[in-house]
Image (tube, rainbow, N blue to C red; front, side, top):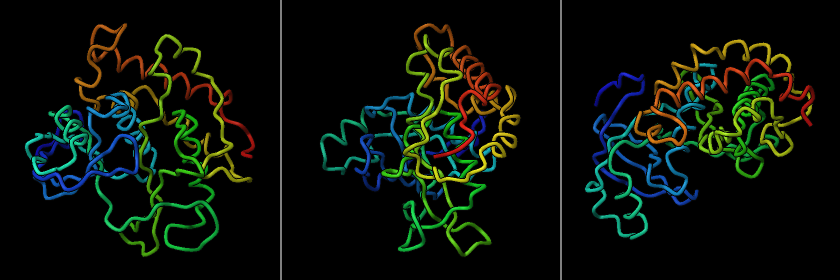
Amino acid sequence: METASDGLRTVTAVRYVTPLRSGGSVPGVVEADDLGTYVVKFTGSAQGRKALVAEVIVGELARHLGLRVPELVLVHFDPSVAAEEPHEEVQDLLHASAGINLGMDHLPGAADFIPGPPGPPGTAVVDAVESARILWLDAFTANVDRTVHNSNLMMWPTSGHQEPRLWLIDHGAALVFHHRWESAADAVGKAYDFRSHALGSPGLDMAAADAELAHRVTPGLLRRVLAAVPDAWLADEPGFAAPDDVREAYVTHLASRARVSARWLPKDVP
């Protein structure tokens, strides 16, 4: 185990526990040499390395803005630790993912957040201020995958709190602009569709969330966040000479979007 120079800890997988088939990327639960257990997303998945780039950028940005995100780590993965995995398609994925992958701290006993009134485990009424902050982050990063049907939110207690608190997971579908860099400039002011968002309820004070968060998304903060993305995940990007050039393109786009929040953030959430 080591602390990477980019700010994310680096661990080594020592045991592949099980695949998770709830999503198309088939992440896996892995034990590492720091005695931690992680949900690992693999570079060889169908979503590709850009999904991991989005996970790091949005996850670390959320953390810097005071939202709860399970710790992200870089995971050295040797497919030999999963030699007993019986499924051929999973083995293909793991062999295509040798090297550095992305791990998210496993939250034992966490329950999926279900939008709605209090009820069975996992349901909760979420604080309106926190809801507005999360909604702001998703609008800013164009996250299309936090809906009423798939919230990508978990309920899990935190230190000092008996009641479960809200944790943000799965940001690989955010930052849609990086799939077509030639149209990134046009996406700077693109409005965000709130209609199916898991936390999109009437009365959220989005203006207050914007006033609190937008000015904190500075080029300096963005460069700190981008430094956490491994060079290997940014290499060979068409139109860019080097990984640092790609990092600076993310900084330019996101800093520009933060400055024009009035263009993409509606005043009233439906």
